[in-house]
Image (cartoon, rainbow, N blue to C red; front, side):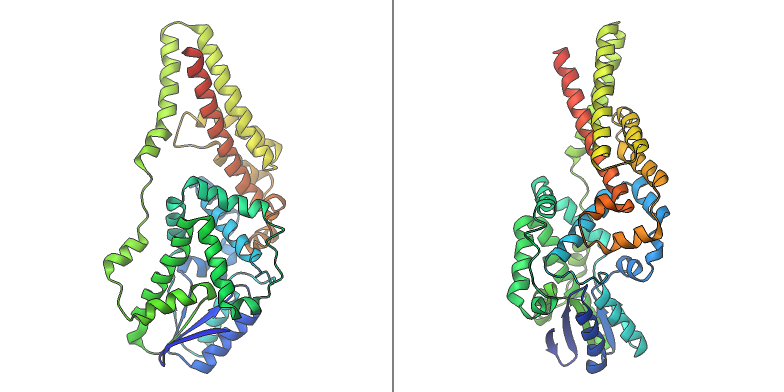
Length: 384
């Protein structure tokens, strides 16, 4: 197991989050090192997800859809699947090692400290920083490299071979540099700063992912406090580019303006043709997206009906409605929810009812967006 002693009062234990071996090592480290504080690489959101899996129910899933958070959940799921593909699939739930450390701390009456940045902050920062081609690369890496990435690498070998860990981290940076910066470098700094702030309280054992061990140790050995301004910067979520708002509202305003102009000119034939083009392309492509996601026929129909309307209102999305219908007509069971949380294979997105709800939402939105732009271009082209 990977261990780094910063000094006699601070030990870092590098673990694999889905490893029985790491879970046992975490329990042993608490007993052997006898710390005052056990610091774990978790935030409150991730701890709640691990300790209260029942909270992820159909009501929660519906809220995710209504709040437009489906893309973030998909992104988090893809990253979790990629972690398992990197030679670490042992059949354990992610976070087994961290829960073991927390349980051992509770049994020994030790304080537990959560030292990671909130998962939603990390995901949003990564999503905002990534360029379109980086998002596409991550998706393609998961979708099309599934077989060749299945290396026969044991968790023990992974934890003992720091060169292999470095290689895996470098692969993530190669695929998506911005995501690598946020998910690895920024979190190394954040974890180290959180641990450093605990030092006046006593002896500390920090249980963190092996991929963060080298970076966190480097920061801690510098023995400097991270100022409040830097911590605020690490928690800051950059607002969307103003240009995106122009794009988002521009097409609906333009199309409504064109429809109104044609009506005012009394050009009934042109108005009918434009309306037919708008309805047909929006409905067809949104429905195609839901169909590719293997949505229920009612979800496909909902996507087709909603898209021509929602494409004229940037505050709504056809995928939200299609996903909610999918959730109603093919409601996931408790077993479906538990299986999806394991995230051990890509096919779960299509086979599992939770994954299918998320895919229907995302793909119907993509189809609706494509339909709106293609239809808008066709209508403008016909007028010119």
